[in-house]
Length: 396
Image 1 (cartoon, one colour):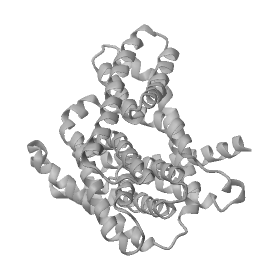
Image 2: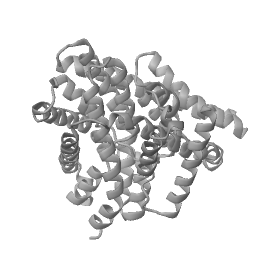
Image 3: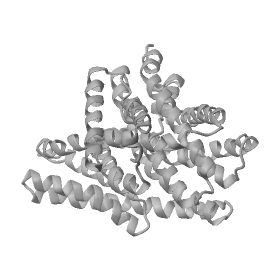
Image 4: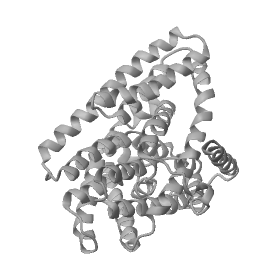
């Protein structure tokens, strides 16, 4: 029965992807999530759901790897300053500011501790560029916008997981926030994951030269994607950052080889089929899973938190733009707002919400429901608004 259900979901995903290719501004994740919510009311699909373990062990490594591997190393080098700042310091500042707002304002409506508010904010910091990047490429003349959105989301997934893990430990153990302890744990997990990923990515890029058969090259890429992820987790590092770093290193090394086109043809033949299948199945399952969390009494608070989160992200990005002279000359405040609006919550936020539910043992049910509501608002309104907003803001 499960096999038939998955086949039907993949068929729906195929139809959605086909429509997406016809309509340049069609927000694919929104359609899939809303269809998933609708399917949750059909008894045949109502028993389906996606767990945090399935997202973390099956979906994320492959999706993160292909995103990093396909990202241009030259673009990363060009925008490394702003991408690195937004996905680390910017992400932490965003989480702290949003957490402070949730604690001060949200505390008027719900009972929440300061650590709980920071934990909730860390769940809403990772961004998901699925479909947004392709829309930005079609609607803006400056490739820097889509490159920054894509690069930032690729790295801040790992940063947000590390941030969430630190706050989750404080939340479940009932400990207070300590700045030195926080940064110590943060640096250990993040630097360890990134360093291991770079090392493994470099080693496997050399191993590709020893595997002339395309099948073996594909197998090596699968080992990189999933192997480095779980190896990093075994050592207590960030598996997300390790996989992203390995993919980026592999891409950079391939760009230096004379046979780059041959290697990429072999790998793309596999990953360009697997990626849309994973994405369509995942967003449909997210819709089915999220339906039960959306029946709660604090939707007004969710709307306010959603709007404030976009505003805080805009402030952080605007400040970052002023630090880098090259970007200050080319990226205006309207571009900064477009970057802010492009920071859509998605897969990683859902994984973190499910992780919180599993670890908190019922002590965070309201936070989980509130988080799912904000994620849904982000997916729907930001995805639908990205095309007209980008066209309007970039017509200068």
